[in-house]
Amino acid sequence: MEQRLVRLRDALSQLGADALITEKKENRFYLSGFTGSTGWVIVTEKEAFLVTDFRYIEQAQEQAPHFRVVNNERKPVEAIARVLKEAGVKRLAFESSVSFGTYQEWSKAFDGVELVPTSGLMEKLRMYKDPSELAIIREAVRIADEAYQHIQGYIKPGVREVDVALELEFFMRKRGAEAAAFDIIVASGVRGALPHGRASEKVIQAGEMVTLDFGAAYKGYNSDITRTLSVGEPDPKLKEIYDIVLRAQIAGVAALKPGVTGKEADAVTREIITAAGYGDAYGHSAGHGLGVEVHELPNLSTVSPFVLEPGMLVTMEPGIYISGLGGVRIEDDVLITADGHEVLTTSTKELLILPV
Image 1 (spheres, rainbow, N blue to C red):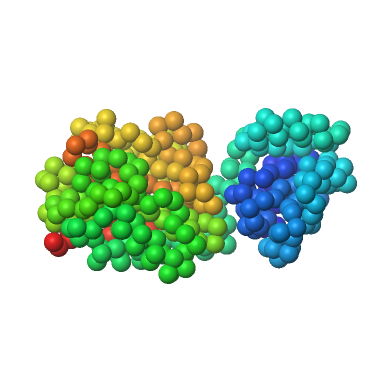
Image 2 (cartoon, rainbow, N blue to C red):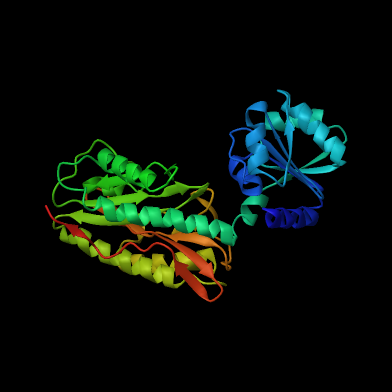
């Protein structure tokens, strides 16, 4: 945590601000380790404060030992104003996600403090995973990989998509996950054409492909994996599509290394899918950053300016979606290393055809 504060202070110095305030839960957790639902982190040139209410004082003191914990006494704006005055803050950076109403309130309450808007400052710091973060993420990935292995023995004709999702989450929780990282996608048959087809009451039938997109939330971090399998022999057209997506995904992963831009990585997958005649059926980006949020920087898209560097963690997840037929998506979690990349997800990507 101390090193993260050092990096933040360097960024604030470049911005010309002498402090930052954030109440976004992901950024608050990233800087302090505090997991409570309410709180404001204030980082100055020399100190770090965590303002919260009486419910979380002991928890904050335990989870955020590098922070001075301040009880807001049910008047958070006044408590924050006192902290800023005590610390001698003159230029306070705040995040653009703050509501206009909050901005107006702060402008009136923070006497003598200039509010400096920022966009993406914390998110850019979070792109680089340190060893402690990676250890947690590896465990989150391991739990998801084990869940995929487990669910292969559960999926069969007659089982509802929603029951598959429940079984996945139950299994991951038994293995230590705090929750599913997001609403689990289970899209079978023609519903496979829905890139974000959350599990429904639909009953899985023999001969259908099933796309599973899920992850484990573990100690504040997330994994994110997608696999598509078949329940019995699939439609030959979908089998052809699977082979195309698999080639694109493998090539996309192979392209991930320091110096490559998000746009270039995306293009590798898009060129293969377009050359096969399915460019219009691949409407989303190739991947995204992964960490305390499931979708964070850097992204891999047709317009992404980000240059990949060691310590960044991204997904690689091309797909093809055909209305009235179904779809295929394959996704891995990939760490950018000094000499290339490391694929954290270990689940097989070969097309599994489950017995019926």
